[in-house]
Structures are given as C-alpha cells and as structure tokens.
Image 1 (cartoon, rainbow, N blue to C red):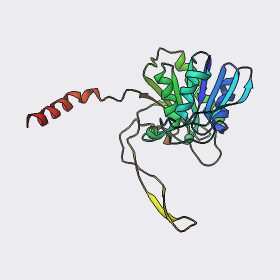
Image 2 (cartoon, rainbow, N blue to C red):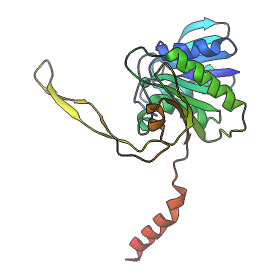
Image 3 (tube, rainbow, N blue to C red):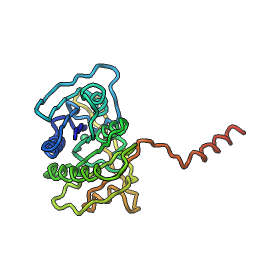
Image 4 (cartoon, protein in one colour):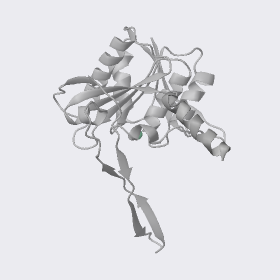
Amino acid sequence: MKILISNDDGYLAPGLLALVDAFAQEHELIVVAPDREQSATSHKITLDRPLRAHLATEKPNLLVYAVDGTPADCVKLAFDTLLDSPPDVVISGINRGPNLGIDTRYSGTVAAAFEGVQMGVPSFAVSLAGTEGPLRFDQAARFAREVIHRLLHSDFNFSGTLVNINVPNIASVAGLKVTRLHRDIYRECYVEQADPRGRSCHWLVGKLEETDQDPGSDRQAVQSGFISITPLKLDQTDYGRRAELESSIDSVYKV
Ligand code: MN
C-alpha cells in the first residue's frame, strides 16, 4: 500500500517515527508533516503566505517532507502536489497525548486525518493516551498497524468517516473497544501572570470537567486500559433536528 503519514507534533516527533517504523517494512510511505509542533491547530490552513516543503529524507519507499504549515496544509499539499497519485490510506499520528471527547475538536492530528476523509481515502487518527513517564509509541504503533490492517481488509465503509484510535500508555493493554466521544468540556482557566517586562499576560491551562457518566465513551475505555476506536463523521449535520429547526424559524416569521 501507499500510505500518507502526517501529524501535528512535527516531522521529527517520536510518535510519527514509530508509525514509520511499524509500516516501513511492507509499504510505500510518504510523510508530509509540519516542520514544527502544530498541536491544537485543528483545520487551520495558511492563506497569507506560500508554503515551503523541504524534502528531509529520500529513501526507497520512504519520502519525508517537512512543511512550514499546519497539519491540514500538509495533507492538502500532499494530495494536490507532492504525491503523484492518491495514497491508499492516510494515517495521522501518533500524537503525543490523547485525542478523546472534546479534544477531537481542536486536534491537528484528527484534522489531518479528516482531510484524508474529504479526499475519499480511508483515514485514521492515532494517539497515545499518555504524556508522562515512558511513552510507549512503539507498542501503540504495533496496535495501530493491527487495527488498520484488519479494518482495511474488512467490509467497513470508510466513506465520510474517520477512525479515531487512542491507545493507553500502559504495558498491558486490556483489549479494544469501539466507543463514542466522551461528552466532556474543558473549563477554561487562564492564569494571569506578569511577563518579564511587567506587562500582564494570560496563559491557558484547561481543566477537564468530567460530567459524562454514561457507558461506552472513548475516555472511559482508555481509563480502564482499553484501546478506543471511534468512528467520527465528517458531515456534522444534525439530520434529526432539521424539522425542529424549520418549525422554530417558521414560528418566528409568523409573528
Ligand atoms: Mn499533538
């Protein structure tokens, strides 16, 4: 297979290198990733300046491009320009840290994979749900390879849907669960400090508020030691509520 790999932690990030190691033996890999960390940039694209793609590695079956843009820029540039033909699959990651619940809104890792979905290619976002202690990227990459191979050889219809994979950062993973997004929110907490010149500045320290006790979420699965895989839809239309919206707007116009 021809695999396009991207991420939001930068082309030198250990999670991306683990992914390359796991797939390099059997596949043709093209890495197109930001030249520096671009976490939490979601679908941001660069419109006010040109992009530069630097070919950092050129080996048989492995090309690595570092782009001075966002994850979404990287995947768009790959499809439009850097690849001579579309890839069979897009994999984004492995992110350093979880992409669970509300994280998926802000994540550049998830957005890069969604760019692949938009191009009609099976796409996966992979994250290591841990940021401290030894980070088990190699183990997460082996699990991701297994999940991705199995799904690509299954009847799963990837059209319009991204597969979001989170692997817990523990030695003995309990198993795998298909999950839904955890309904969590970050209570924003801006810490006000004085900068070295004495001016006030505000530093964001989000605090996760856990209110979702219903079973089956991605966060719960990872917290109990399971790999979480969640199908995420590109089309966010709330089809079930169109009629309600229509009658609400009708009543406004009747007044
Ligand atoms: Mn990241």
